[in-house]
Length: 194
Image (cartoon, rainbow, N blue to C red):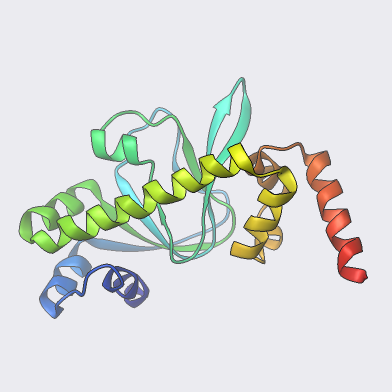
């Protein structure tokens, strides 16, 4: 299972066998059922998760309403970066939405890798660039795309999302009501029949 993560990291910088060995020493493989909290609000994040199978939902409570900020799908990382990097309490929670297979790397494990070999600094920088680009794209989508365009975009990126994610969570992620999402889904089904 770790091979998937190694392949992902090799797409950023080619790891030597000894660097792969160093990585495997600090990784933890986890199989978790649905609804397991990986992090709760006000806790300090100590893990970076890489999703092999399943989906992780990151959300924030606003006036007791859960607002979905992010979904992490297979071959993606999940980490509340500010909490993890700066050792501060998180303002988000992370939970598995279905049975999930994850690989985790602790804060201490990452520090070990960063101190051991400069390739990890390069990989870390490249992952941060990807993270920032994704975040920038998400912000831009809210500024320039309609709800319909945001919905169609996530379906293109993750065609099976409606099978894996509660529609209320999906609506929250898209910044729309569940009723609006239902209308968008109905219109899409009608247009697919034509």
